[in-house]
Image 1 (tube, rainbow over the protein chains, first blue to last red):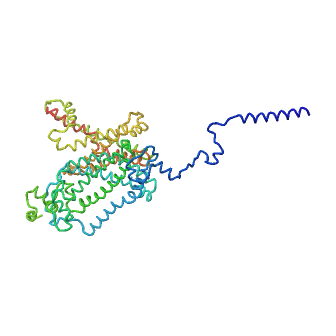
Image 2: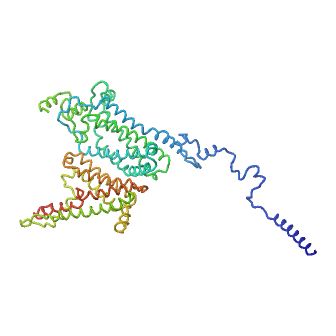
Image 3: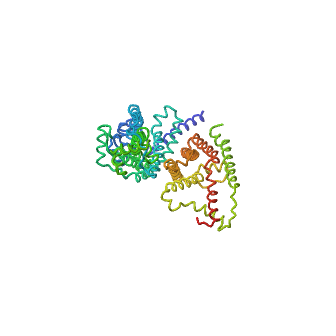
Length: 346
Length: 214
């Protein structure tokens, strides 16, 4: 009995001694005070600001404000706000509508061809030809055409693969085509710069605008008010030449930025490049369809100028009378060609 | 058997066999024709003429150089670019190492590949558009010339489309065109790759024997 009482007393003393020891341990300096926590929450994780305010601070401003985007990122900004506007433009405008421009041009030209047919040489082929483009010019033209077709097709696949190819052929075909198109586009891109320079050198002569081009423009190339005079290149051809050169420079510059992104430290340059590159491409592709139409089935006798380098004299008289007079020294209104044709019995 | 296994396996074996045997057959055939015996006393060395004839044709004649610069630039660009691509593109070295000779060698860096491919493509396109643009070239060209040009273009083009190496289908398509090209090679003007030195050498040897300067 005495032993049992002693054990109980020792146990009580040990428990009391333990509690005293526990109370002597100080809490760490960063320990959370439960009373404070009940008021403000653990670590004040939610803060005093709304979610919108927080994200606005992260972005450093309104993501859709073009002035803020141009001004560039401010110090301490954590997110690239220009991305949202870029994505809006790319998805809601470019990808949505870009494909309709070439399709629309093809539709209009098909309608023109069905209603009006090709533009014939009114006085027929004379059987006599004039040299129009030399071999180097023709090679430069077809070199550019080859590169342009490869870049145009691969570019359209890259741009419109997701909205056009994916729903029709599925993700596997789209993935294969996009991968292939991207490699082809990147590889042939630098050749476009070479082709552009070559075209510029070979075709700059004769492509400066003149007063007579104003008349051509007012008469819409002869659609209203009858015949319009033209030198070697008419207003439409000159406009196409300068469009290729100027838009081509933009395409080259933006293409270089996209192919070698590490050359530019600013993401906004790349975002602007994708937009300009896509808009320029759609413009060039759409107008080139008209150029191809006029150069092939749309106008009788025009394809020979780039295939053989020669054009029929009557074609030259009707479409480029001032050039005809310059190179032959004869009047374009003179009907000597017709006489020659009759005499030759052709 | 999968598409890739077929074009890299049995079809490649058949194509390579046709290529090697066909090319050998044609080269040996040309050599066996021999040359007509010339009984006139020689005024120079045929062997020296053979070598000089080959070397001299690497440079254009002065009076033609200006008129044919597209041909010269395109020709050299295409052939040199193609050799670099065939021999130093990393996937080609891996393929040769794993399937043919087990002898690897250093590959071009990616930027070097891009430059070589661009030069080769530019050269090939220049040569072909000149072929269709020049009235004389157009007249003397036939289907064989165009098929040879286009097959070579498609081999190069499909190879470049497969550069990302993300889809077996693209690699297999490249190999399919390689196989077709190898089979077509011995029976076409693509054989000039092995016969050009014989024709140049023959002309050079004839001139050399006559003591004519090249």
